[in-house]
Length: 293
Figure 1 (cartoon, rainbow, N blue to C red):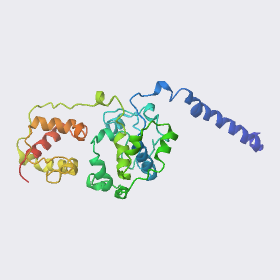
Figure 2 (spheres, one colour):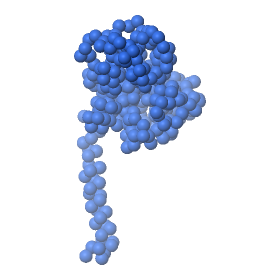
Figure 3 (cartoon, rainbow, N blue to C red):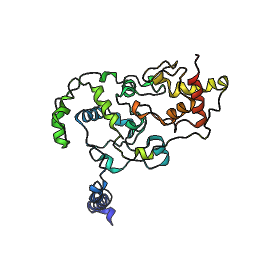
Figure 4 (cartoon, one colour):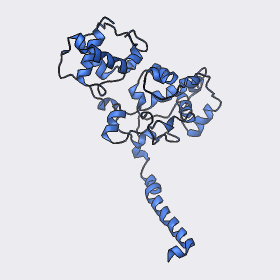
């Protein structure tokens, strides 16, 4: 009986475990992460982005944020931001991967698509004071990252990882802060995925004219929507902060509906078509057009 011979039992158990490990964990690497899985548009990190990635790991961001959009429809809708679920080719240059398993905070695999601001203003405000843009957030402040970036090993890292770089890339690190680096990293996440524009939904209203002409009837609800979704970038009183002032906007109702639902990528405004239904967007349009406090 094996249970009476512990040495043989241990050896056989080890063999069984190794067979299972080989079949499920080792052998698949012969068929995955090969040339066929590559996504041509996915590029290596620049020195600044790589420094930001190292800071992301140093601060333990992966303990609260995952970086993989699962194939579940709910995950794709919530975190895909037009890029769909994650594919193996997206992580070709990740050393190590930061998929994570916990989501105390939202998944960040597509955060660069959600906030495409070329200057990273939203990210900076969020990192310095998370509650200023997400009031219910329990994320601590990372304002201390506004300190000089240590570039002592930057070139060595790029050589070790075999990532291409130029002297201009290294020179670009001069005068940069740790905050600049981590923002550069987050702005890249998800932006190399070529399917984002093809999959991004464009919301077209079923009703072409604003059905909410009675401002008093919708003001309370619309104001609540505005404070939750818009105030962090456009000011509590629509006076403008990160984004432009919106009080009494001169844009047409139809144009405002289009901007809110589909966003403006060039200006860094995210889409709200998935977060707000058509009625809420129209009510928000009515409130924005309102020229009184």
